[in-house]
Image 1 (spheres, rainbow, N blue to C red):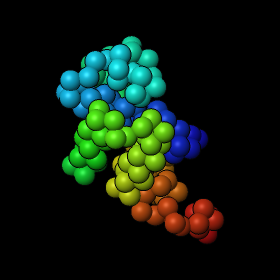
Image 2 (image 1 turned 45 degrees about the horizontal axis):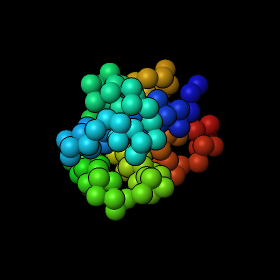
Image 3 (image 1 turned 180 degrees about the vertical axis):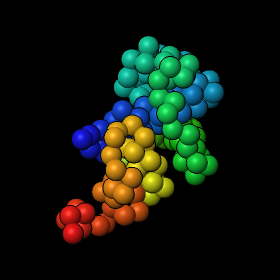
Image 4 (image 1 turned 120 degrees about the vertical axis):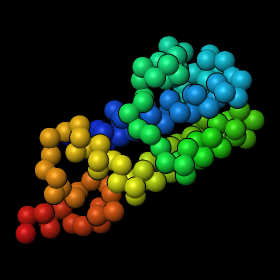
Length: 132
C-alpha cells in the first residue's frame, strides 16, 4: 500500500507547482526565471504550463488565492526561495483539511473506502482504532 505522503509527492506538489508556474507566467516572468525560482528545470516548467504535468488537482478558491499571492510575492522579491517550504506546507495542510488527499488516495490506490488514516479530518484518530 502506498502511504498518503507518496500521493502528495506524485499529485499534490506537482499541482501546486503547475498553478504557481502559470501564475508567474501570467505575471510576465520567463520560463527560465520561473525554473530558477522554483528550483526545477525549464522543461519541467514548460510541462506544468502546458498541463502535461501537475493537472490532477483543481484547487478551491482559498488555495488558488494563496498561490496567486505567493506568485506575486515571489515576483516582487518579497518571498525568497527558502520561504517556499512553509508556504508549500501550508497549502498541503489546507488540502488535507479539505480531504482532497484522502479522495486522491482512494482514487489512485486500491484502498478500502472506510479507511480514515489519511490526513483528512479524521487524521487524529489512532491507527489502532482501525483494528478494533
